[in-house]
Length: 243
Image (tube, rainbow, N blue to C red):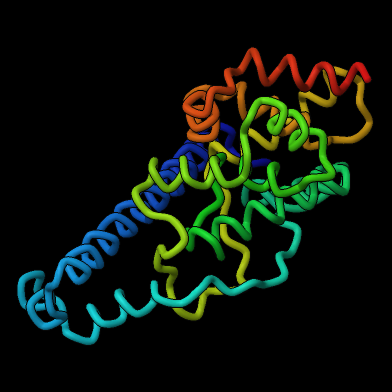
């Protein structure tokens, strides 16, 4: 039996909307916890904060304490970004990534989950993963434009209002966190970038081109703030391809 195409499109749109709302909810929660920690850092007692916000003393203590320790490192499995029902296809596409590109995607999850304590992987985390995958051409292109991992992390911290000490839910570490719909589209576009150039493998350069091609994505906006315009990035990548 075949699926009704119209209903399937509706289901797909609702799934993407749900992920976007989850993304927005996570960022709002991050901001909320950040403000609570600012109240405590400004001299407020845990009891005062709890009473003012209608929270338990234990919950305020948990929010403050969970941000105190350094992020823990963990092995990151290769993620699949395909939509429900097509996950095998997503993994097959991932197998076409170069070793550096696979590392970049895995490092993006590490940046999201262990460094920024986010519960999703967005284009901003993919950018950080590309910078950390130093063997890839994308890192060389970005470095040539003055974009470093430290500057990009600082820009993301500025953009989302929090950085290394964002709270992550207990008991969820080690699981495979989801990509945002925009991040999934970027990875799919990277495949098309490789195909359009008749490249057999998907490299970090293709992912970078896909990132800057999505000018409404946070990664592209971060790069623009750091002085790396889409035209400049594309020129650097084309030079790498030519060499």
